[in-house]
Length: 421
Image (cartoon, rainbow, N blue to C red):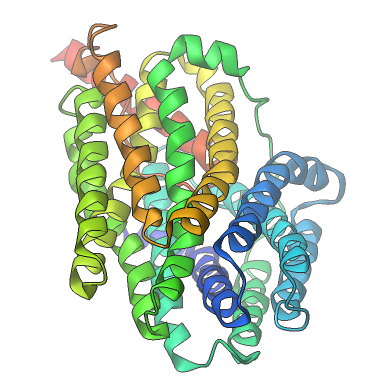
């Protein structure tokens, strides 16, 4: 593993720094929005703006890279993102914040595409799985670390926004000074949604609703904390627990994924999320109950994303996997745009604890649909399924496609080994 990391450590360091800045800004929106008196509905629109920009960036940035190259795109998008972070405290209006969030989401998506293209190019078939796993760990640690940094300043001032901008700015140095230009990023055209649904109804429907869950957790979690009068430190811990759970549960769920019917595991993970959200709703403002619920509800979200990707690939030939990955990323993005809007409306109409009702209800829909699909199609033999690889919901189509290729290669090697045994 040390030998693998020696070739990509600069990229991973840059990713950690970027995630420190981006993770700080996600929570800061909820903290500062509460201070400014923004409603849950207004902050929901602001939250959705990021995912709309992210979805657009995933399609546009590969075209930009082909025209002017990785280095220029990375530097330009990073500069715009850094400027956008500083601009938030200058004009505290919801519609301005929404525009800034669209801009930052677009830039962040392009940064992911560029960094993941470099990372994929630096990997080989033998080490790609380890490199992608290290990349996902770096992202998660950056987000968790960002929450700790928020306790060092006051969200009512500009200092934390400036700090987030600084982290993004200095993240360019280790990346741009250590990598060389690579071939232009190629992202497959997304598979039409009808074709994707016909191939894997559970994968398509499940990942749409999971997009709603992920965007609600990452974007509205701080809004919920602010509205129930948690302190800034408690809100930071709450958001950190959402991602810490994913870091802990990813491996055991991944291990089970390669050894049982994935639909049963999807049902179990979604049911656990449903139960945790219900318990959190009943617990009210009990701090430790909220933290435990965040740990497990957030902990099953990221593994579910990887499960849906792997399950969909199980139904497809290898040549269709890149297009299916693009379709799943698109479907997830649409759900991520709509989820915070539904949650914001519910919180504004029913009170802040509707945050748990929407999350729990969405988990419940995923669980019930998985249960229904188990009655419609026989389970694929475990020996014929693709390998599981933990991919974060924030990854661009580049990483998702690379993970799919790696999973297919691993499955082929495993099958060949069994045939010769």
